[in-house]
Image 1 (cartoon, rainbow, N blue to C red):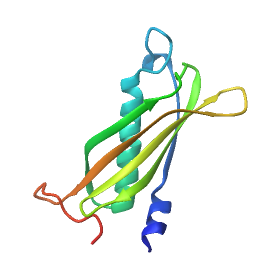
Image 2 (cartoon, helix red, strand yellow):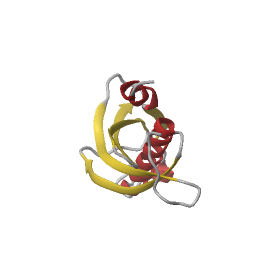
Image 3 (cartoon, rainbow, N blue to C red):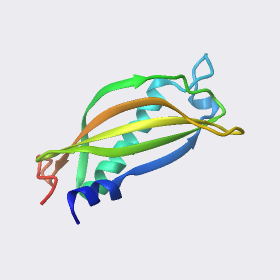
Length: 128
């Protein structure tokens, strides 16, 4: 499989409903909850790409463009954007969909970097 094919096949999309237990006093999704979901999707994307043990080493510039209200559906999409020797960068976007209306909007996006590690927890090559 080519690198491009691996990138395409590892793209990960997850849908979630935004319930009150994940919202703040403004009735919108907690920023920390959004980051947690984004890191999870990024981890799954990186693991699907590499099929190795991956650990998060950084999150870069997470931009909150639009508040995510309770009672909406969100789609998180993870895509590999860079492959290094031992690391992978994954971009994650969160889109908002109203439950009972058409359309969707980009709400949040950010980048996460992962490193592949071996059984001794030392960095190892992403592509062998």
